[in-house]
Amino acid sequence: MSDVVAGPSVAPAPSVVVGEDGRARCRWGASDPDYLRYHDEEWGWPLHGDQPLYEKLSLEGFQAGLSWITILRRRAGFRDVFHGFDPALVAAMGDDEVEAAMLDGRIIRNRAKILATIKNAKLTLELTRDHPGALDELMWSFAPAPRARRLRSMSEVPAVTDESIAMSKGLRKLGFGFVGPTTVYALMQSSGMVDDHVEGCWRADG
Image 1 (cartoon, helix red, strand yellow):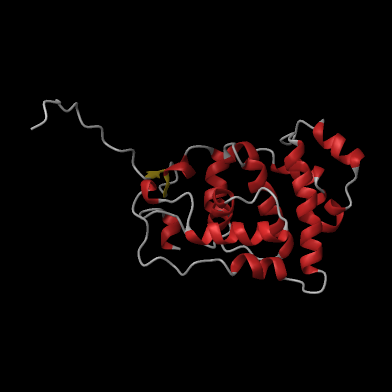
Image 2 (cartoon, one colour; image 1 turned 45 degrees about the horizontal axis):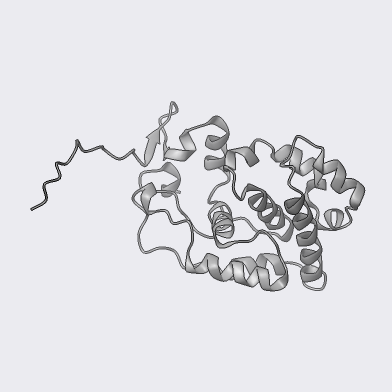
């Protein structure tokens, strides 16, 4: 028998929170007005289209090592600097625009991520030039089958899955940057390739 005396138990934080509007949401989605809108209107809804998914990939790449709210609050600035994430316009960005981006406080001023965003635009163009929809098709090919049951708590939400590892490898093989397994799993969540709204969230019933 152990001589260690257990301390008082601490109840885990609830996985859903009821907002002022009476709706129960995933806990993270109720923590900030910007998060609330994102949770309700975007996160987990199926997203299709080469350009929208290129934008999502770019923003998730910038998020690496940071909180998503940091990116969300700067999204308008990102869209301005990167020409609405039109791959053709981003691919044409030259040194002057890169230097301007490095001085623009509306975005994350990380040279490696800026250059990767431009390179990824060029790769998107190559991939879709003769096959519009190819980036959409490629990304969604890694989407797993729906889970047998709804996740019951935030502690069950994974950071990496076999599918995100496979997507990361597939994109890296093509030359895409800032597409690690954790980054692309976040993309899979936000673009609806997986549904990680937990049990009790109003979106889980949608």
